[in-house]
Amino acid sequence: MGKQGPMPSYETIDDYIADQPEEAQKVLQELRSIIKEAAPDATEILNYKVPSFTLVSGGKKDQQIMIAGYAKFVSFYPFPTTMAKFSDELKDYKQGKGSVQFPFNKPLPKDLIIKMVKFRREEILKNW
Image 1 (cartoon, rainbow, N blue to C red):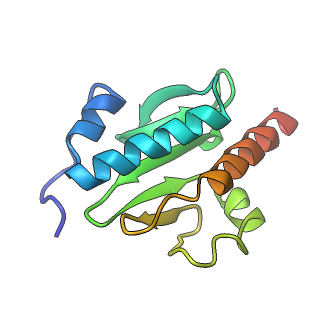
Image 2: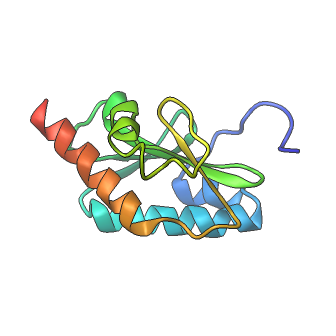
């Protein structure tokens, strides 16, 4: 069972990650590195109290991707249009409208995550 009570506020993404269960910390750091590899210019911020990445300078909340840690998985929030574009490749993962869960017992699909981040960035730039 997860932590009880209101979600704490964090000063930095590092603070957020450090407060997660040990297994979640490792996967969050790996996911963070993959996102930064795919979008080296992404700005890291906290949004909705979770690690977020602004893919274009001055990007609004709906132009960010986010990650969050849980007891048995990490969630990646790349945006509903990105989820739809990669639905076939994500079919083996539990999903929400704009998120995908990566369980701790499976390696992160690095190449897929990179493609998703790059797709979302290009999508934002087309509508910028």
